[in-house]
Amino acid sequence: MVTKYDVFMEVYEKGGPHKIVDVVQGLKQKKSEYDKIRKILETLAEMKLVAKNDSGYERVMNHQNQHLFEMLKYCIKNDVNYNELFDETVAEYLGKAFLKESFGVKDVGLHARTFSKISAILEKNGFLIVLSRKPFRAVAPHNSFLGDLALYFGQRPMVAKAKPDEYFADIGKELVKFKKLRKANNRKYQEILEAFQIRFIHHSLSIEGNPITLRQTIKLLKEKIVPENLSVESVHEVQNYQKAFLQMVQNVRAELPLSKESMLNYHFIAMQHKLQLAGRIRDGHVMIRGNPDYNVADYKSIGSLLDNLVKRYNNYLNAGKHSLKDILKFASRLHNEFQHIHPFFDGNSRTTRLITFHFLQMNDIPIFDIPLGLLEEYVSSTKGSKKRNDEKLSQILQQIILYNLKTINEKLA
Image (cartoon, rainbow, N blue to C red):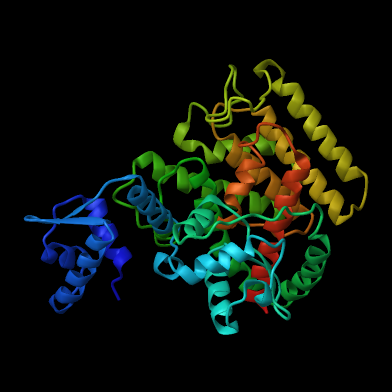
């Protein structure tokens, strides 16, 4: 069923002016839908989202309309059904959920059936971290998109400050469950891993500016269908990162510890579309785009800093068994240290994620994706942060790990 948002996107993206029949054809609708789409265009004109003139209907470009367009484009890029999310009740749900560190149906105040429906929509898109089903408790991670969605429908979202170390008990319980479920159904686990890794590749490279959509990523990596509107380099970037991810999975299965060589190898594989940079330690200064306050190492000290990092990693391994809290603490240090060393001219962040995932999986913690709802917080606690904060990153990693575990366990059960 065509909605006003579908019609708005058709008109706004293509400019105009458009005859009604043009919109019908552009949306690939039957001629019988003509009157319905005409009424939608009239509604959009009343809302000042489009303008009607003698030539047809044309977009109205202003800050508010452009912002709506960008939000809808965000949904399309990430394969999110905006017709499910762009709703006053969803916005009300989010506005109340943001006020709580964790929340249940009573905190939101909606009918139980409506609450469950919205929760399911948010969860499937990575916008909700479910802590328990009975009774239902969840965390709604705040990000710009969800905040803007709430604001668009008149909500004024305020965000509760999360306390540190609040998810260790939940993660511990899910890990016990995961080990039993994986042993009982390893084939299903491999299928889940494939779906997760494709989403991770899309999410990870979207942070770095690759324009590929999630749907295009799935078609490219599963069906070998190359998107027509992408540059050759963008396509190769996706394919190379999958190869690097699969190499990481293979190394973990072989129980190979991290080494300086494996770190460089991950970069070499991931950056084959830029052969002059692949696996090569930089010999000049760099700055983080958009964050000049982010401190990176002098290129002359990179070799020794990497050696020291690997040495600390080996000391950690030789120290024996570690608690979950210690594992996540070291994972945060490993991530931030490598990223601040910034060994390469390009591709540092994507390599850092592979190294961190390698470390966590070697400690029997299945982490294969950063959910969409946590991407912004993850970036703001890493290369988007003006000051290094391992504790903040540890907090985000807890949420990411819990999301991975909950999702995997429910699919395996």
